Length: 73
Image (cartoon, rainbow, N blue to C red; front, side, top):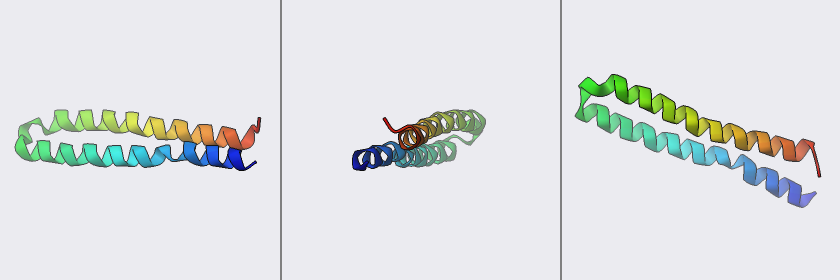
């Protein structure tokens, strides 16, 4: 049981990586908009796409953690 809990906790930690990644991407997007305000539309589109992909990994990690807890091997 202890190894299952550790595995679920490690899988749930993917949310930290996604949060850090989105934070870095947002900071870089703000820098890019401050340098080139006319390109803000394109920059925001790319930021939203990158944020969605980063959050997808966090959701997959959460699903794996839930599956480890519910479907104990």
